[in-house]
Image (cartoon, rainbow, N blue to C red; front, side, top):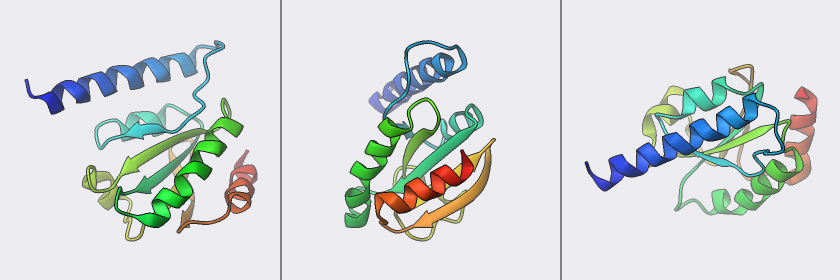
Length: 135
């Protein structure tokens, strides 16, 4: 078993633990973006009523600029909105499936379906307005 396979198994186990915790009321709330992969994306999005996914890449300066905003929003909306981050370089299948052409792109999912999209690094207030529109 390669190191990548082992890391992927650990990620999947942790993701299942997070999703299990969200289905069963408990004091544990996901208050930061969850790193997603091509393999974990569908299950994560399908397991929560409202999800915001940040499509990003390491080399992208606007992606790095918006990352702290996404992290703040994950904390601010913990328990009501679930946030994920998907590195488009490492997970091209999912990025391609959603036609991601520019990054950062944030997709808003309600009950597993895309309901909105924001492309580019925008101010926190813009993202809050979009989120509040669907809560």
